[in-house]
Length: 129
Image (tube, rainbow, N blue to C red; front, side):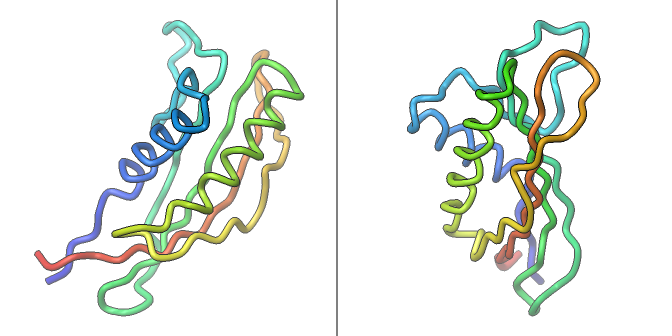
């Protein structure tokens, strides 16, 4: 029997660490956007993922959307490009391959923050249960 990691949790942890190492420790990384009643972060990355299909018995493909939010057009672009670069480096114990299929793309967002979206395909290796 093979069990696969929670890919959202795995990517949130990876991006938090990678952004901190890149000098961006103030960027919030989570699986959902801060709620309207919460204090809104000036910058955040939201990870949304779902497994699609098995490639082999021990590997699956996950489709991941990364939403990058910032207060200005220029900062959203810069942060989006940084996140794109960092996610390409996520290969490790469970993540075997990362393909950025689209993005960062400017998307319309209700509210005052600029949003960039990345569409990523991740090959994930499971482990014995």
